[in-house]
Amino acid sequence: MKLNIVLVEPEIPQNTGNIARTCAAIGAKLHLVYPLGFNISEKQVKRAGLDYWDKLDIEEHTSFKKFLEKYKPEEHNMYFVTTKGQHVYSDVEYSKFDEVFVLFGKETKGLPEDTLKKYLEKTMRIPMRETIRSLNLSNSVAIVAYEIFKQNEFGGLEKISKYFQ
Image 1: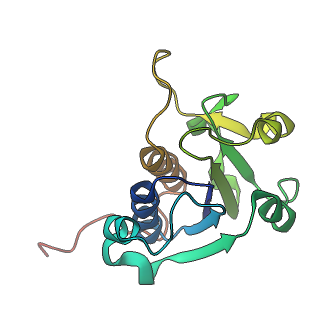
Image 2: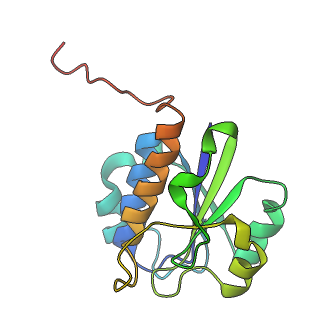
């Protein structure tokens, strides 16, 4: 199964670096949708991603509109993660798909409201206490990405360490 993690206008370089490292570790493709709140070559991004940038499949998009024109939600298995989501992320049956796109919005505002309303049935959330505004973006990506791989029996990932063998 091919997993696509889409960051729409991320603002914090350390989050993007951490997400890049997660994507490299699980073999997910990372899509960065501009404008970014930082320069992709900034030291903080590189530091958070450590030495995994060469192992990362990354695609950059000039705008959210251009991304949606190229990867139409009506033609792809696409999910929008938001605190306003109508479904819990773990309730989706990802294992029935060959490819999945999971979109995350910018840290301060999330995904555009008009997009969420248009694709309301494809919105999902990570449960949390009502008094908390949101989780950290890089943590959210990791939670959802590993649920997808769990449902696919961690296909393509090393499950048992060979360190002591």
